[in-house]
Amino acid sequence: MNKQATLMATGSIRGHIIRFAIPIFLGNLFQQLYNTADSLVVGNFIGKEALAAITSSSSLIFLLVGMVQGIFIGSGVVISMYYGAGDLESVKKAIHTTIAFSLVSSVVLTLLGYMMAPIMLRWMGTPINVFDQAQTYLRVFFSGITAMVLYNTASGILQAVGDSRHPLYFLMIAAVINIILDIVFVAVFKMGIAGTAYATIISQAISVIFSFRLLLKTKDIFRVELCQIGFKKGMISKILRLGIPSGVQNSVTSLANVVVQSSVNLFGAAAMAGTGAFMRIQAFALIPITSFAIALTTFTSQNIGAKEYDRVRKGARFGILFAMLLAEIIGIILIYNGEFFISFFSRDPSIIAYGVQKSHISSLFLFAVALSHVMAGLFRGAGKSIVPMIVMLLCWCIIRILYIKVGLYLLMDIRVVYWAHPLTWILSTIVFVTYYFKGDWIKRGL
Image (cartoon, rainbow, N blue to C red; front, side, top):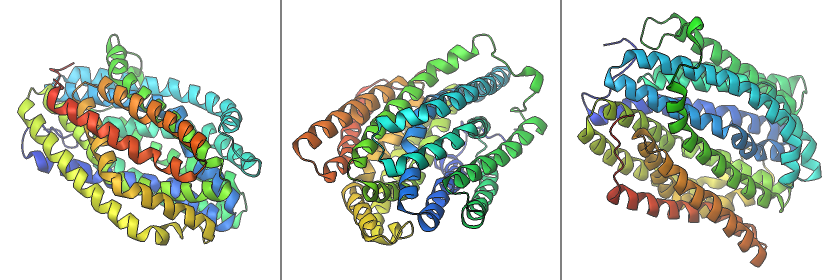
């Protein structure tokens, strides 16, 4: 057995999933520190408009990078299935093809993000007093997007072969550096909102250096050879076949969230800041859920590659039930402590009021978003990535947008916008559960 890669097709099902999910959870926790440290520093040292600018930029960033990240999910499934099947030559081809794709896509994202930032901000109806700072942040961020793409590439490769520890180590280092640079650039050097973007770029670049150092020097199956990086015959089509549906899902969900954000923007900077602050908190709350979804994707892929279909079903039951229970416990904590958490971002009573209102509406329904995330991860790992794409397209995009447009037409109240998430979470949950029990979702290999 390789020293760093882990085969999940044998041994304890719960043990594999939990041991794999814990480092991913901690890694995602530190990943969120990037955005949260930016928001905390900006909210406390610059002001309300800057906090609104940075928190409202998240949905736009994910809209532009969502397709690429979805394709990386597809590459991870391909690598995991080949690894589970013991086809090590195909594992190497998939890895080098994934890196080639990441290099090309990072160039495209840099150009697209820099040019599209002002256009998208206008389309979102960003207030004048927020627009310039949001544009500055986005343009600096996308100028260094290559670092984020390459880190996600390396992390995805490692996780696909069962190594979730090293991505955690590299993120921990980067997160600490990001917090230090945020304070130095904004509080000391007075670089404004651009300083937070530069801090993120530099810290992400450091995580890339550590990640690729491991990939280039390891003796394990996932060793990268620079001369082998390129699009291998037949491999990119397999990656795209599994990855494009995930990318489309990411993009359409992000598009819906951009509409949600533009609707929040109608209620002013305080609403933007308060809602954005809670969404940062909710992102932390969902980390355990998304971690289980990623773990279940890798577990499912490897076991299907190894033709261990009964293990897939047992792992699915455990992952779904555990994630839902955990999500609801977290949701109850948020309901009773929303004001306390939001006050870290700002002491402005109007900002806190909006954030608490959002918390009271959304937090009780985290079980539904947990089930949707975990089942989507399960179906992707089984090679059925088109299923979550269709469900998310209908529930989290089309229906969510229609609900907001009609709802605000009938009643101009921000609570209409706040209910968009929980209502569509519940709807997607109903569809996923129906497919789980009635659909043939275990695909036999690639």
